[in-house]
View 1 (cartoon, one colour):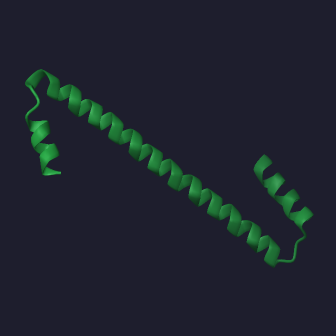
View 2 (view 1 turned 90 degrees about the vertical axis):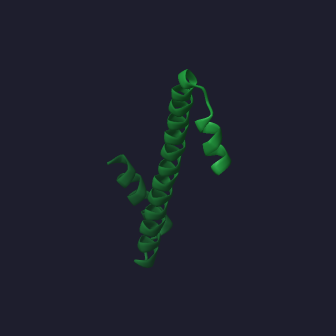
Amino acid sequence: MSNFIELMKSVQSPFDMVVYITLIVCGSGVLTSIFKQIREYACHRQEMEFKRELLDRGMSVEEIEQVVRARSDA
């Protein structure tokens, strides 16, 4: 990691801002993708828990499909 920092410090003056901006844009893209995947996982997990709760209540598969379909339409 220190080699990378030393490399960044050795970039010539007019080009260092271009490199920094590129790093910021790429880093923010990676962070956005990570947070998006975490959000999708959380939504999937919540839906699976909801379906399990419906199964525990004794609902049939057809009833669960109707509830999930009605929930997604709303």
